[in-house]
Image 1 (cartoon, helix red, strand yellow):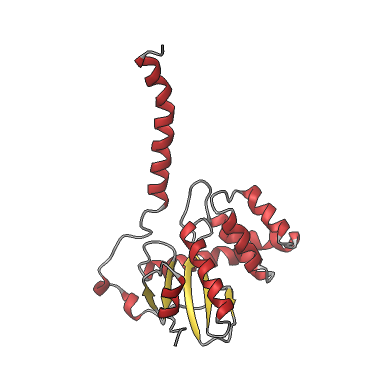
Image 2 (cartoon, helix red, strand yellow; image 1 turned 90 degrees about the horizontal axis):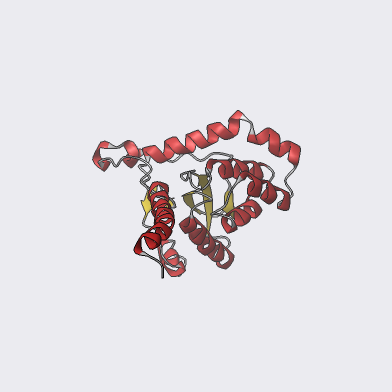
Length: 215
């Protein structure tokens, strides 16, 4: 018969593991920036800058633009991305998604590395393929996994290496972080239409209503 003391010693590692996992989730999803009073912010008059390096998902000539701040390690981002891609197939000329990568996660791997790979994949016009694979591996985006995704996506090694170490990719990420700070983005995904943040829809029909696709 196992004594109470031995049972306690057995359960200590399990308790520590659960506690660590809970702590990581708290850190991972804590607000990105301190909350500010909207009246004291310049966000109300701020026009989100759109860069040539921003990946565009959908028809670039579509009249309505959704600006999406997302992170490859974000499960909610993956779900929203899937809904929007389904709608783009149904309404290919109605709207487009302009993607602004915003690395927010440090656990289990810093998502900034995945963002760099995504930027470089977009340079080689393979962002959609990279994004799909990155979201499948959203909880394990180590350097090894990212290299594997790059190979599966058929990214040119020399171009990729040069891009990953360029000042352009670092500047792009810093610019998006500054934009997110000005907009007072507290979590990803964050979506903007006509420079106004919308409440994240929970279903495709809610996206259809927001974008007025059913009319």
